[in-house]
Image (cartoon, rainbow, N blue to C red; front, side, top):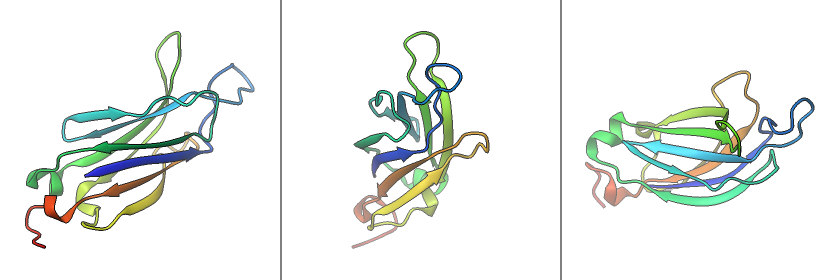
Amino acid sequence: MTVRIIRGRGLLATDGGPGSMSSDPYVVVQFAGSKKKTWPKVKTVNPEWEENFEFVVSSDDRYNADLIFQCFDKDVMGSDDDLGRFTIPCARLPAGIPYRVWCAFEEEDKPGEIELEVYLEEANVPGLHA
């Protein structure tokens, strides 16, 4: 399965204190025990990542695992700030065609959304034959 993190828009600005206008956002993608992350984009709330990640999908993962996306603001001092998260169940993903979508964060107090594309190859999906 290929996951492409394309871009974000309207993310929470957490750098610089009150009246802050930016963040240094990055995205962590978790699936079936694997974790990958994008490079942080500096001083923006509308980042452009265009990064691809590959994940192996087992038959159990196909129907029971979730893709978990978490966005953070990279901080030099202290821990990184949580900008939001969302989940996509693997069972909802179509096989053999790109699934491109804007996803808003699950938390109501976390503005912004992430555009991504997931491609699950039919050959890698147990039970489907070409």
